[in-house]
Length: 265
Ligand code: GLP
Image (cartoon, rainbow, N blue to C red):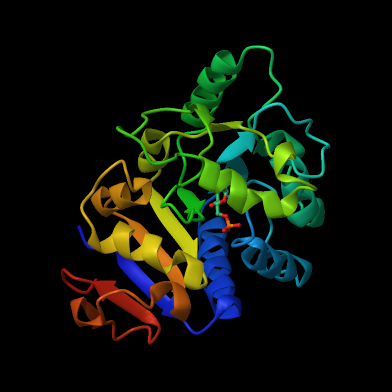
């Protein structure tokens, strides 16, 4: 199954393209269910969506959201929690119903139960229409680290040292970065009806190449996306720079859109 690849000129264009895809879904589907990422990469997309909302172009009143992941053992109001990130960078600026926001509770007394409940809530909401992903430098998606198998459901993970180091930039010191997190599983992500992965910058180019061109292996978690029927990678030029251009074919309808292998849609 070919991955749809969109290569944009820069981070700003990547963010605009991603926001327009989200807006399109939210506009056409009542009660659209979104899977939402954190990290630096989606910040521009959130800003674009907020802008569209403020211009009266889009409403999130009926939208239901499930965040991908959350650290274990930090309070929701901690400045590095993904709860706080989501409210500050997105939810506080749009008209979403707070009852429709779902974020894993990394402080729940029973973390396994918390993960089971999360899966059940996703199922009860009718499943995710569009999950938006960032990409770890080691190929992780959400907090699914490279490992011997693909995890089927939401679960607790120990973070790799490289992820702890990459995320230390948000904390005062590396020792404050949590060692564990709760994350949607690879199976949870793959059950979403469509997937959009965002990656920008040089430091993601290797993970992008391995995910798109390499074998499907749990050692590069994002490579599993090759098996999903409806997946788009939205990249900037730097993140796409190692991809084999001869295997891409220009798509007539949209100049920035390139389909990787297979037939044009
Ligand atoms: C974290 C998050 C991921 C995110 C990744 C990349 O580990 N759990 O969901 O995709 O970082 O983050 P960034 O976009 O900051 O590079």
